[in-house]
Length: 281
Image (cartoon, rainbow, N blue to C red; front, side, top):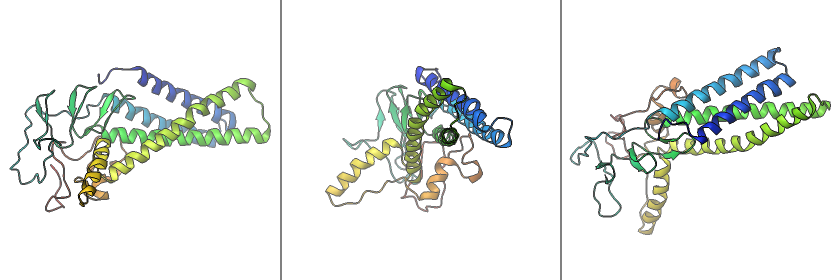
């Protein structure tokens, strides 16, 4: 259930604390020194990145991803909704039998949360929550700050280790080596995994897709090609407009830990809207 502290959340927080403390109090202090300008600057930068990552992580854990109103019902005669999502079989409007209500466009039922989620991307076990319309930006910003903090820590770790090898320093002996090895063992796969995740979601944002819609689009593209048609993702309205729809209209707030997503999550602009310059409600 959303908001509960689970084992994966404890593991994430423990990894953050260990990597941060090792980088600051072992790597930076042992290499640059925490009393030097370079040491203070690097420790301050890493602290800021880590703090932002922890804050956005907490927000992603506790923020509701978007709940479908009980009164929602699609209006098939609404001229401002040029397309309506239907079931693959039968062609009926999408209706959730478990929640007993219609599904808005891009909404899906999460079997773990046991509810429908607006613009659902996926259920993330590491935050014990769904990633949806209301917390997608928060999740994305968390991954961005997480990657930035990991890369900064990795650069410091590699630079410090290279410097120690060149100078043949053996300070702190065995404990020094163990700290470096364990921190590097955690950092390497974590940095790679988060970087891949960040790249994946940058691609999704630029094309205004969710993870679910990407996989559905692969099948739709294959079916369209079989009959000689070309499939186009209906919610792809251009790179800049796609960015705005997720990160918000204010460029200076794109990477702030606030939810400034456009719209209510019940209706979205599509490539078929006329005129295309109109904003979603």
